[in-house]
Image (tube, rainbow, N blue to C red; front, side, top):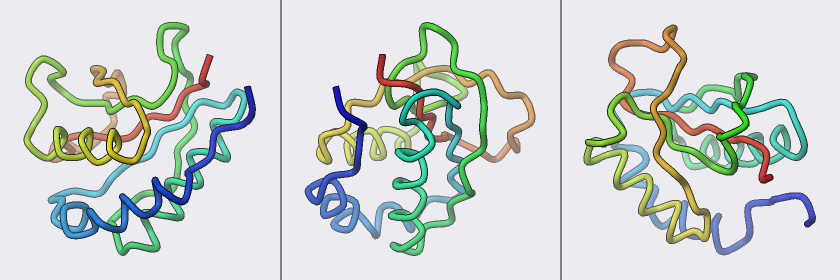
Length: 123
């Protein structure tokens, strides 16, 4: 399997959903693993979202657990993600990215943060 990349279709879907992305009430933190293609893939998301004017924070390195693979949406309450988190999931699905909700395990995120984007190795 080759390195993951944001396709032209994915970039187009993100651009089409620009108003939803710009309406987020908080900064989007991008957290990435340090293995495989995670760095490049996380930076592609960062650069694309930044180009759309999103309030996004540069990718922060972290450790992915063995059970954490692919693109994850870290939320405080995975059993009841917020409307914005569900919209973000729908946008990613439309873009061809298959995200999974997970409870984040990083206590240093600000209280007002609703969700983040967590890029882990594909396999």
